[in-house]
Amino acid sequence: MFDFDGVLTDNRVLVNDDGREAAWCSRSDGLGLAALRHIGVPTLILSTETNPIVAHRARKLQTECIHGCDDKWTMLSNLLHTRSIDPATVAYVGNDINDLECLRHVGVPMCVADAYEPVKKLARLVTARPGGYGAVREICDLIVESRRSVRKSAEL
Image (cartoon, rainbow, N blue to C red; front, side, top):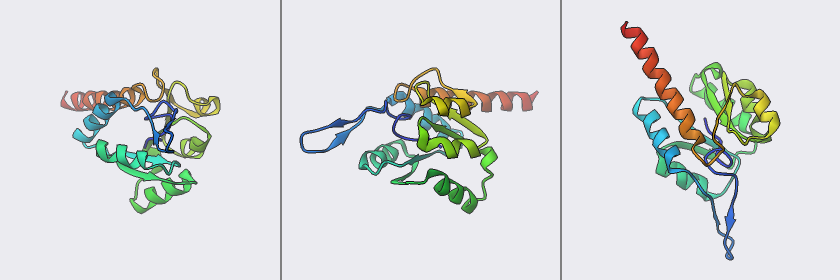
């Protein structure tokens, strides 16, 4: 599970004179998510943001997306319950106070390097890279490598 603003973006927004918004994302994050998809690891973007940018980027990344969500933990817990997924098996990547409840309840709480300090205190892993600058790729690469290591160990 990934937050969008501040995780897949650098947490900034560009507002045009007509009110349309744009955000910067890292292409390397997209390659990391594709690698997870390739090994069968499901991903989801969970965002409070209602901007269509979130859904557009998720579609491009071929990643499930729930956005416009005011209470992330309620949404996430309902989703996990519906899909019979134990929260202890879920990794969640956040960066700000609206991610705290999700981070408190999942098995692998993570955050980006430039996350809000209370978020960092809850995280079991803090990326070396900030949000929007390859932090998601960093996490994806760790997951892919850990799967390879487990597979190699099983072959021995």
